Length: 125
Length: 365
View: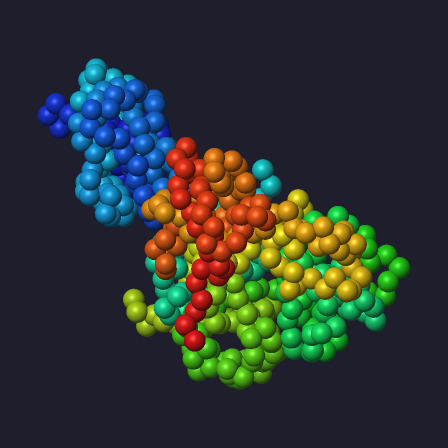
């Protein structure tokens, strides 16, 4: 499944979608395919400040545990509470219901430095 | 980078959209539909695993048994023709070189070993065979092997094979012919904790056999393929050791709880060292842990007691069947009693863990 054109991508497979004045972050289908069945997601609380290129949480699958990285700096506005009861939402709908966090960006221009869908698909299509 | 080896079922895996990975230098299927799906299917119906990457070593000659007795910890004399025995192969210090299954045929022995240790064992055996009337033939490349595991396997194979699997006792085997042409050996054994079989057959018959067994009747096929990912979660639930995790050259079989596969009254390479280890009392023991967390422990995580590190995790996962975080770990002997409360350092957080009997899962009778 090709990465959708309506968002930007970090090289570490996190998508970033602008929705009004927040940026929603999740992981790509490619990342989900590598991880396989997701069993747990560790996400930060609202109010936590995150930095570009730094880890903001962990995602665990049957296979392995991986860090989650943000492509932008900002403040966590919300984490996807549905993932507590059903981490497999990330497998089922990584670009929609499986979203991870919503961030108020410190500097919206940072999104420009991320990859476009075309660029991401060229690398990981 | 050296090219990965492929089993006779490679084309089948690719056609089935399996996610392929490098395992011990072989290109193997990690999963087909999903690790958890394949795990559940094995525990409720029947799964077929390609295990052709494992070593298959044939020993012949007047001193074949004497040689195997010299390198195996188990007393193989106790096994009759048609019987398979689990054993360790140790070095002079009692460290584990591999865990294997040795099967006694009419006029030869077959050893099945881990793919990752095949070359190491071949060198070790050739070194220790000098001067003995024994020949070793590596049959890995010319044969294929599958494991068919699950509660529905016996009835399934009874209905398709010329002679019923029901007639073969656990850890015994029989060589049969399908339609008088395809020769195969049927072992009643496995690495999942379920009933089932392992089948060895020649390369050329492999894809025909797979096609025959997997004649699908749509989405609700009784027999479905499963990969190495599910193989690992299944064996962990069954409390079975995996070389490179619970077993290594740095550890001995006694500390791993495998004393039942070691005959200390027999002379074999490593026996002296193991007798000394046994006499001194084990310093560390392999235990099962159930953790109070939805997260999985992984190899290398520290096990703590009262804030002190007293052990290390060797394997861990979120058990798909038990829906609990389970792990195996070596801990100090005085912390190994069932029910002991310990902690596991899980990525910086100390999580409560209780020493639990192995296996975690036992198939219903």
